[in-house]
Length: 74
Image 1 (cartoon, rainbow, N blue to C red):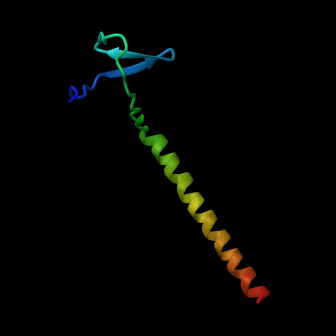
Image 2 (spheres, rainbow, N blue to C red):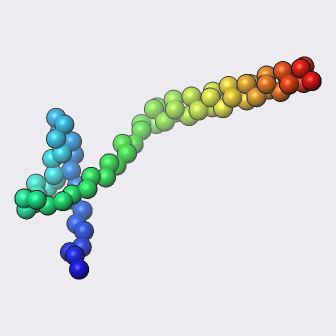
Image 3 (cartoon, rainbow, N blue to C red):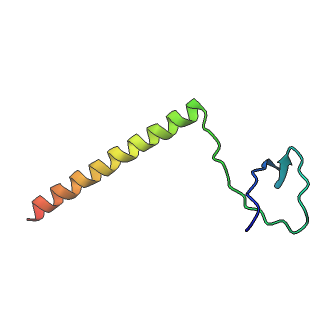
């Protein structure tokens, strides 16, 4: 039987994970790091949404062109 997992939060500073609050883990302690996605600002999210919409429209145009080519060749 093993001890239950403990969640200790941290942040990367200068490429090093700094635990918050400073936690002293015993030498040899095995850890896993789960990266939490950074939230986007509303402006950034709006830009990503606009690019997704343009991408969807572009793929739709390609599909229509391919269908036109198939009908012209047929």
